[in-house]
Image (cartoon, rainbow, N blue to C red; front, side):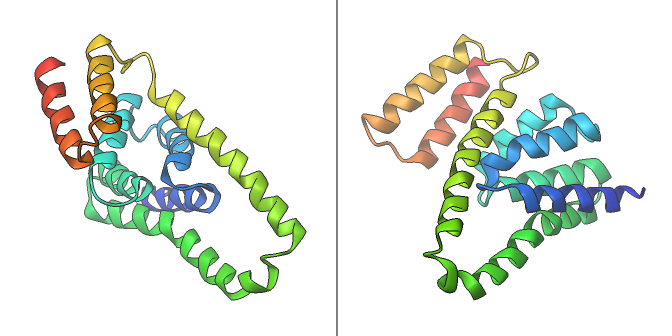
Length: 175
């Protein structure tokens, strides 16, 4: 199968079944891109997640864009992956918006949404565990950066953008 078609199908599937947003999609992306298709290594995937978190926009779109470019060495790979991951959401939201007000109090719809919330929590937890792997396991310096960032966030209410810049600088010099 052509690489571009394979990328489109893979990211369309991720966009279709990735309930809960970008962080919940990470485990799906990692499974298909690293384990099934071997388009990138786990180390590269971890780097992509880190970069995607610091750049503007949803993490799933940023990841899809970068993976598409990396897999094809072409801007078209980026475009195809980004469109594919966002297309299901666009179609579903247009469809749901037409019928939401008619069914928002339906007990089955409320129950389904409640169940989806629990799945999303599990997917986000799975994504966090996948990022802690043997190749990129955090060392004590990473824990120090995390601890300082945590304290600065909650105790001193430091601007998140400043924290990202400071953590990047600290990571460069410490790691």
